Each structure stands twice: as structure tokens, then as C-alpha cells.
Image (tube, rainbow, N blue to C red; front, side, top):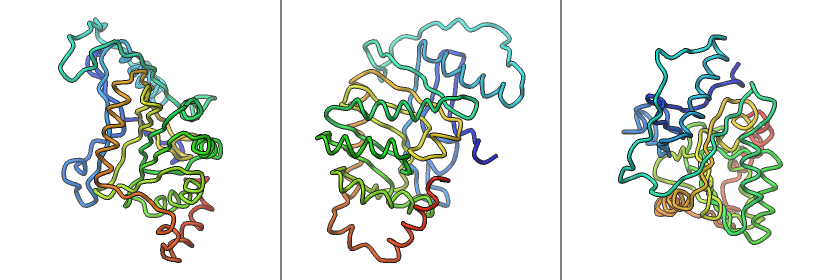
Length: 271
């Protein structure tokens, strides 16, 4: 079923190195292909957390085949030497998976907990913004409580229908004081959240109902200020190719667009 799509993006090498994030295997990441050039975020992991990534893959394999995937020989899990682009200090993280094979919407609960724990700022990049009521209210309450909330969406997306459904939430965000940016240099496909510059979430899940309730997704919550600040620095770089939505200009958008936003909003629980 389309509702049960496996949306995880995982690569595990020798049980010692893992990659996760939003990147697919597609030409559009290099030259845009026949569509917009895509911008994305991926994370390389080395250490004990790779075992959790591998567990997610093995559970996927069993869910589809009903067979256990056995290794020819056990991995040694020798920790590699620190490289130049690696985090120098100890980096704690948790791997969180969710999907229809679980009774709990773990990634949705992770997003909600992270947002409600914020005290100074929340920085979000997502290609689709169709949150459930709990996450939408949490973002608005945070902004109304003095937390700086910044959300970056693409100005153009790969799905026009879903894009307008995302834009239908902008009015509520602006009313609460959330800063909404539209990325103009291609299609931003990153799924990241940084909280107070102290911890962050990187993964495959969009802020929409399908990702949070129906799809197989995976993400990592990283408890490290260096990694979190690196995400925020990248967000600040993206601002050079983005435009801030200003209320007076947003209210002047074409009437047909307003109508289309509201029509797609009616179907947003299914998106």
C-alpha cells in the first residue's frame, strides 16, 4: 500500500560506518536532471550507533521477506580513527525508527518532545510542512512564548499539490510569530531540526502526516552542540538564497493561490 511506503534512506558499510538523512540515489542531486536541483542533508555515523542503524535495516528485511538476514561472519566493530571532518569529542546519539510495524509513532513523539523542550530557538528545514495538530500547536506555543522559531520550505517543490497544502499553514505560523523562509535556489529536501544549538534531529521523516503516521522512517537525535550548530550555520547560509515571508506581501498573493491552498488543506490529513 502507498501508505506503508518505506521512506528510510540507509547505507551501512561493514557494520562500522553508516549514513542516514534525506538523500536518495538519484541524478537530480548532481545536476537537477529534468527537475529542480535538490539540496539535502546526510550524516555519516561511526561507532556504536551504527548497530542501531543496521538493526533498522534488518527489521525492514524481515518485515518484507519474513526471513532473518544472516551474516557470513561477525563484524569486529573496531572503532576507526578520528578523521579531520569528524566530531572530536564524544558524540551521543539515539537512532529512532517508526512505521506501521510499531504501535508507537516514535519519530512524531521525538519531534514533539524536541519542540516542547526548546527554550531559545528552533530551526527547521523540511520540504513538506503538513503537521498534525499537536506539532503545529507546539510550534505556535513555542513562538508565542518567546522562542525564536524558524522554518525553511522550498519556494518550488516536486509536488505542486502538496506544496500548496504546506503553504496553507503559513498564515497560522505568521500569526504566532514564526519566521518562514522560502528557499529559492532549487528544491530543499533536508529534514532537520535543531533545538537551542544543543541537540538536533537528522533523518528521513518529513513534517507531514504520511511520514509521521504511515511511512517507515528513521532518524538520529544527536546530543552535541557542535553538530547542532553546524546545522544552524548551514541554515544561515541557505538564507542567502531564501526570502522571508512578510505578512503584508503574503496577504497580497494571488486570490487563485489562496483558494488552491484552502482546497488542498482539506485533503492535508491524507498527505
